[in-house]
Image 1 (cartoon, rainbow, N blue to C red):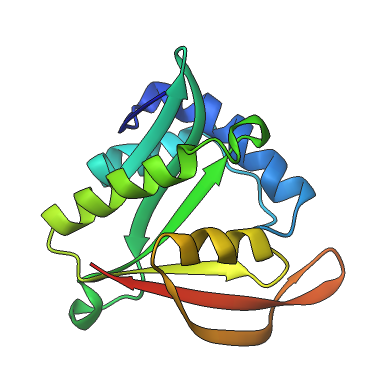
Image 2: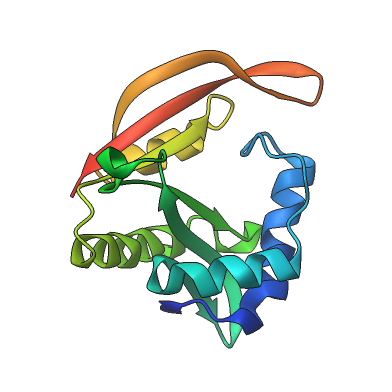
Length: 159
């Protein structure tokens, strides 16, 4: 497995990972599918802040960061997403992606990373804890998907 900056050509593989998570799980509250064009635009805009893990030339996961909130006062705090194909989970790809993403963030002068984890994703909370993230807030019933309200767990790591 290698971790590298994403390329526009990865958009289809990233969509193939992301859209089943959107459609079938409560890992993300997003309900709108990701398009290849939208992903390619994000990859182009974020540069090294969009990382891909691949095995044998096939993307098995990605991690990216983006502004936590607008305005100059928040410029050094970023929110991140990390998503893995089901077959990649538990194999070290998530840790490798986050290690690479944190290095990019540090080099860019980012002070902290925030992860917004679904309260229905205890594995995601545990994953972040293993990486040194701390739970800083639990926002009850702020997400709505599959006909029910869900909690959002905010996790933070100072870089």
